[in-house]
Length: 96
Image (cartoon, rainbow, N blue to C red; front, top):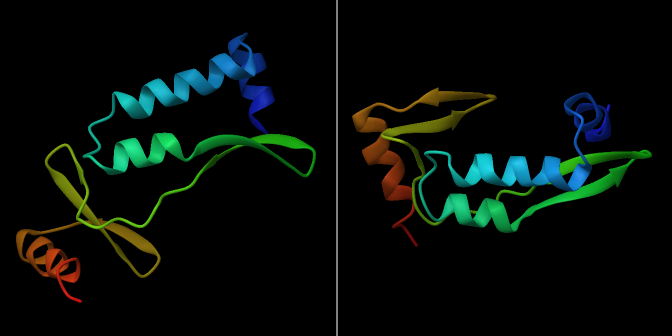
C-alpha cells in the first residue's frame, strides 16, 4: 500500500514520517553498531508506483542485542536465544 497512505492517515508529510521512523530506531534498545548501520541504510524508494521504506540491514560482525535479549534466525523463524545458543553463535563471528 505504500507509506503515503499511512502518512496521510497520520496527517503528516512523508519526510516527517521518515523522521518518525528514524527517531524510533534511534531510541530503540538495539545494540550498536546495528542501530547506526540501520539508520544509515534507511531510505524511501518507489516500488510499483508506491513509496515504500527500504531498510537494508548490513552484515554484522558481532551479535546484536535488543536490550538484554539476543535473537537467532533458525530456519524461517526468529527465536529468543538461550545462554548456550548465544555462546555458540558468538563463535561464528570469531572463526575465519
